[in-house]
Image (cartoon, one colour):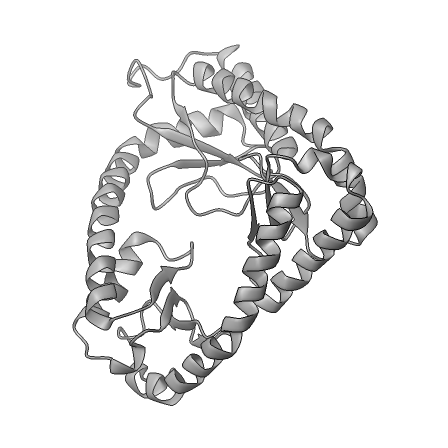
Length: 311
């Protein structure tokens, strides 16, 4: 049985504030170390997207500091890049250098040396995206709004597979007559080989790289209208979500208000509307994170489920 929000906050608010106080010194150390590394390696930024606590982030920075002190020359490819400590090692579609926190030092060194090789894939991605767009009547090629980081190398291969499948389709038949002249209003996202064929909550067509052209064309035909409706709803929800976030920040006197990527705007709106109707003095100056579970993180962030008042 899930706890009642107000009761849970009463029981955990003091713990959250104490943890936040205890980690303030650690955060200051991390900020200092991060600044030193950014300057020494001439990075654009260093970030942490691994879901672990900030002590783990300090460990990652210490490891990178060790590399900077012992292998500075080999770190040259990091210059003017954003380094992200992440669940995998590679170059992301945004061009960020992702370093898996579970890798040994030698793996990091070998990968960093080979960043120029990985960048070659990054450079061809826009070409592959443009090619797919041209084949599919000018459709926009998107990245899923709530998806994990993807490596450029794998993504380039996915794009090529979908383009080839559609080319095979067009070699045998034309697109349906009821299709508009252009699909520019729509967006397609190409994901891994084993992903689902679906319309996302944001109205994007999501396709696995291995989807046959015939099935993909048929799916788009059947879902154009629902895609339009979802796109419109998402645009409206994003606007409402931001307004409610601003209101809740002020109403509850929060230090910060964030959410998991998995909490889509419609879910966040439910949470924010519920919170805005409540008097929750225990949340004053607390870092609140909307997610799917109750927890107090080691750095004092308070996590509550988006539907905490719906059950």
